[in-house]
Length: 57
Image (cartoon, rainbow, N blue to C red; front, side, top):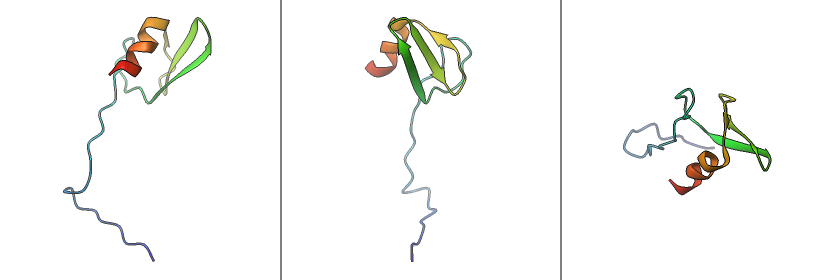
């Protein structure tokens, strides 16, 4: 049996970057080629330099 602890004391706050196009939280960046990068879940397209910025944070 698993018991869950719902105490705020043990929860961690995770900071995710905002999409530079629409401002929505970006959970991942999908790369489909050298020039095609898409923020998820919003679906906005970003350039290579912007996609790299997400990994440098």
